[in-house]
Length: 324
Length: 209
Image 1 (cartoon, rainbow over the protein chains, first blue to last red):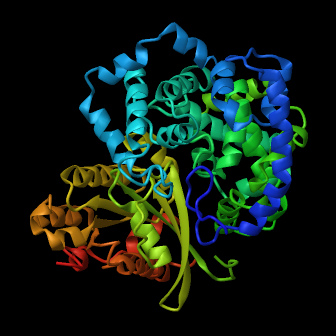
Image 2: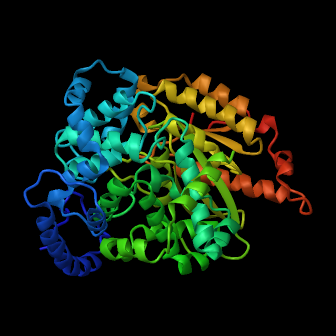
Image 3: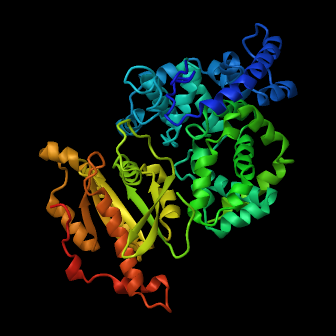
């Protein structure tokens, strides 16, 4: 019998495409098994892992669920931070809270994955979600709470039940991997939308010109992709695969994935004759079968975009940040 | 949404308002003609929906930009409302701060998009119907802002659907009227205000009280 709830607790809508999903899973299951056995050899019984070319390659090919928490913690640097600050999370939980900040967070708790059985009721994961969001916002007071973080913490909690680890992963994301992204002025994240435009102009000028011609702003297309790191945008397994790379490599994977989302749909986009048609295509492509097949999609992100030299990205990023 | 046909008109509409004012519900109710009873998610940045309507013999494509209400996204809103011909300023009838925010947005629009017509929209009318004491801002105060803005005023419920279609149909028909009255050889946006109904016609107009 087909379940209407997936392995992570998300209810499948009436329009869920079982056929595509089952075809993909039939293939993916053997890939998962092969990766799992390779990871077993790599990890053995160790409780931590050191960054290396091999580990990077392994992350790009996907981390088994059982190792995700440990590997994300180690390769991102969150593990080290947690060990250096063993009391921080507990103290933050007990500390006096800024009421208006907590009110803002509370407004979003029941608006976080209402279609997930762990978030749809007031017990379940809503309290851990509140704890982590509150602690992150209070520790990083200049940044406070940014809508969208609720979806990221939500997906982390579905995989990692340990609030303290989720807290340190968030702290590392905000301060080290994606510095300035969640600042109140939103400048960095806005500039990265422009950067996506520049990457498309560089990798596929025809598509760039077409999208510009119809005045579709990159900020409309990409804002949720970048703020939520694809949580609540792409299918959940695809998001975790992206995060396998994100925690190792940082923002670069976000550019690769967004560029691939645009470029692999170039024919559909070029066939559009209006603004509306283009935005409709963008709504459709985040759910179509090529995205469900996360393994092939990630492979394409690394193999089909050509080189992504960090120096060039940095230069483009600086230009984008200087725009008014 | 089907492919665009010749002769159809594009109309950009933006929804603005405080977080939790019910902007997304209003758009969803209008576009899907139903209220899903699962709780809604917060909007990140902006969401986009479109609908095609026929008014006065013209087909108009409504391009509806549903913006995020949280303070954090305020700095981005300008990107989203730029060039909008109509703005629906949503406020939760049961939340006083929500009305203050609508006032804020009206000022922002008057400064930056003077050609954008404003439609004031008090949401969650069904809650006020059940519990009249929950109305947060006196009707007279809301009407006075509507007068100042020369704006239409609606009280909608996305739960029952009350007045939801009316808001968008009125926006579409005002748009078509404006185009019809506009001199053909000068289709610049500057001439937009000229053809608006006079103050007298619009003053205090309120569809639901």
